[in-house]
Image (tube, rainbow, N blue to C red; front, side, top):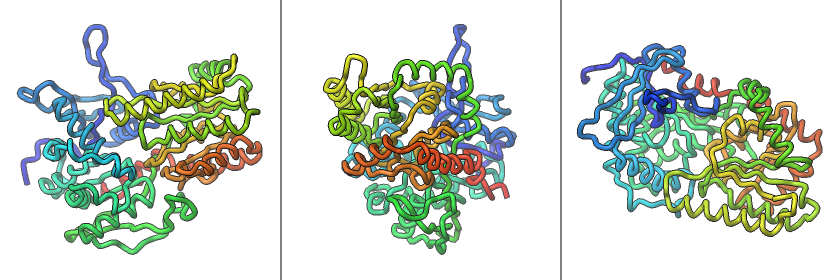
Length: 494
């Protein structure tokens, strides 16, 4: 075993830092909190409240590696822990994250194989970055410590860690979908990826379908033994829609090791959301929405980002068909599409954004009245307090990605609508669709299903809205982000 340089019993590997770095007017570095209380970063950061001498390992972009060293920063909030940043050049970040991760892995994970591009991927850089993360974790970890690795960018890190430090416990959580084996097998590096993940003690996914897809890939590609299936936990809907699974594989065996598989969807913080919507800044945004966008109209909200997986174009076309069919809705309904622009400069995202903007322009040009614009499009990143105000005012939340690992927006909308009614229209290809019994599920690939769903939402009686929303609120409140984190870490400290 190599020399153990650090003394951290708990280590998180995640490419982003736990706080946003900025500088004040005197040039001093300051760390600022993220706006949203429900993002994964605040959740992971809270682990250090009860774990002393923990370490968070992320990256930092540098101009050159010639004199660059790993940066260690002692943090004090929420309690003392170490932030370690691994230097990566601009070329490494581009290759590792924007090209290999986003152009090769992302379309496969979301079952869009026609968007898969392997030609620009530099696998050696992806390996090297994962090795640096793994080496840093090994150097920081105390004997028998726990390393929690996050997401597909660090697929190879568990394998490198296990080889160097067999004493460590390794957990991995997959924040995206995991596709069926026939699609996953398109990746030329499929065997190396699965072998690395099977070096973990625990591998987690949002929902049983992704767990089953992974267990089948491990069985088919490497011959890993699958444990006898069990009935899915009662927090999941077991049958009836595109992503439901009645049973799930609890463990795999490979190379004389047993790997626990866990299906646990990231939750929200309902209590925090309810507290925030009573604050003055949120109430101010609510007044602006009431007197501006909404007035006496029904407000439909959709929130996502510019990405071909998010179904924004399909949603807009469904809205256009709605206005074509029913002229009585003109001036009576408005769609707020909060669609954050992509920042990577990837051509496919630029094309997607151009298509969205052109479709919005066409709808507004065709149907606008003197005092009514049917679609409001925002491509800026809306602050979380403002987004909560939109949640409280939206009569309908229309979330219809073509594929989405979970979709926290759907859960956050439900948490904000407690005792308020409202309708959630949800794609059955989101992980949240097997959690929120009460949503109006739809198939975004079908014009008829999309048309029927939005008309159902617009015409739903208040009593039916309340009945459905109460079911969803109960689901959101019974499994929070804390429950998710506890389930992921359960047993690793033993």
